[in-house]
Figure (cartoon, rainbow, N blue to C red):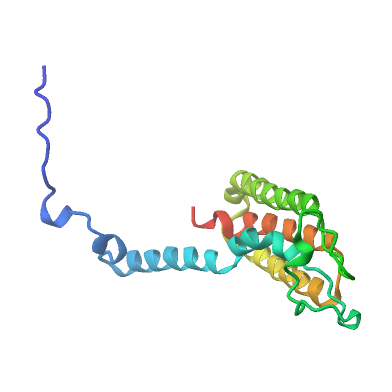
Length: 178
């Protein structure tokens, strides 16, 4: 029988892993890879999809304020119209809480479905291609959300755009860092 291995209390100095050696390794190629990985993770967060997830109810529940009605409230789209019924009060038309809830569920489900599809396809299609196409479509969809506010499009258009943003993000930048 072989004797049990002796536990090593420490690694030799040149093999010791520290945060410094992990984030700033020896060799130019290794440092470039670490910088690329950190940059991709940072850029993934800067796309704003976590903010979309957090603010979906507010994005969807923008009340129409009609300044000609003389109603006060400042036009922020919050406050009186966001009560339980979501009826919008005087002259406004807020989305009901149930509709906002179900669209929010759809946004989260779209992100999950996108992650599952990406897990199955990203290695076959390639990360560069999925990233390029996904970011292009993502830009157009975010522009569509901005147009929703500018043009006063319906809540359905905003809900579909939010779901497609999450789906597209999950097909491209979402799983890229993994």
